[in-house]
Amino acid sequence: MSYLSIQPLLEKVDNIYQLVLLASQRTMELTNGAPKLVDGSPKTKASTIALDEIRQGKILLKKSAEK
Image (tube, rainbow, N blue to C red; front, side):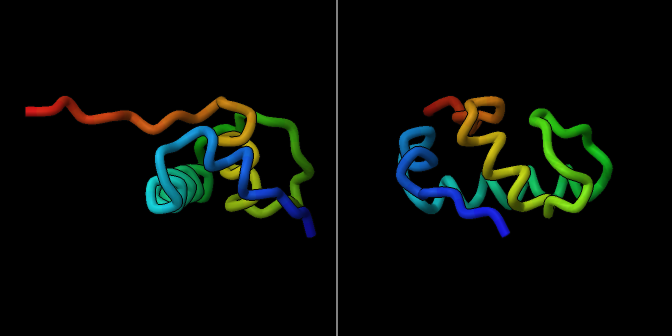
């Protein structure tokens, strides 16, 4: 099992809730067949891959336009 520190992940988003939202959305994409943006073993879980992609800056949270 891989352990990723949360601190580098929180530097990529504004708060923990956005991190959870971004990671869950990307995990669903990977589960549905989206290509991985980072190297990893075929046995690596989609959630771990999603967090690693966020940590490496390959996935960013799209901010909606303010009204």
